[in-house]
Image (cartoon, rainbow, N blue to C red; front, side, top):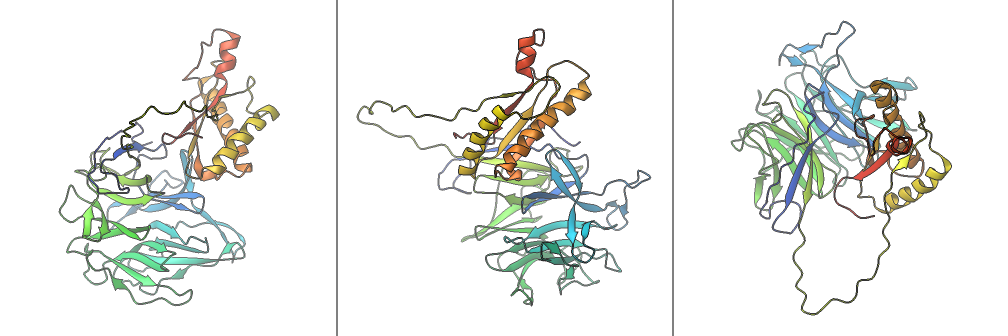
Length: 421
């Protein structure tokens, strides 16, 4: 896997990003699904995380190389907790699940909010390996054969689709006007059947490359290699024009492809962790300190508020079955999570030290996944629950006594961000 440690950056921003407070604390974390190769373009498609990554090795263990860029071809992968696999869709024509990846470059992707339109980049149909945007429409729960966006052409690249459902516009990057590496950003209106002509986005495009568009709450975010902090940097469009997102989003290295889940949580990719060798996905969290409250009179006596207390779940020896008593507690957890759609939980599996390390690592993951699966049956979205597992590496008590081992056979819970349920 790629850079797996925790990177925390604390930075004060002066009135520049997502809230109205003057000071904000930004925390960066690496993610467990980074590989040793390039990982970028992370998008939430429905309830599934999709990422662009270097192609998997073939049956002979070789990774196919793009002769133009002399880098591996890219594939689309589904992220499942800390692992990834080929992206697949249910194809209507063949009435079966098929992989979306070709033998050449694939990705990135975008999907409409209603889940009925799916967009992706691919160059398998081009005689000159030019990238094009393709889209598929869901009919009766299955995806029809992909259709080509009308601007696709063997003379230039059309790539990086992002469909904004509110405006019914497809945003994308292309070099069809300037050629070479001079990509600009465009949008094209879509009425459900016909595409409007491409419109260059005013106030954004420069003599440099503008790529990876994203619309969040009506604001355009994008990536550009115009002179700035490093190579590629992250920008957004404001009433005053395009502005750099600044540190810690931008560094002396390439920083690309931002995606925002909400006003305080998002992802982007950067090659800062590998000293420019390959891109990794980073998660960021924005914490805004609350303004001080001046109290002139003594406050009234505090009213005791009953808080929901998170507790560990203990498992029987060599078991990952969720018991009826545990289900009663997990029902309460699910109820709280369903009341708080902004909360993301990490479920962490552990074991005692009886048995081999590899076996216990697998057992701890099964315990965590069993808890996640039950919460999903109670209506919690799968994408809001992450799974971690540590085998017997992190005991809670000593493993020298039966009582200690019993406490170590557990699943713990933690949340992303400081919250109270």
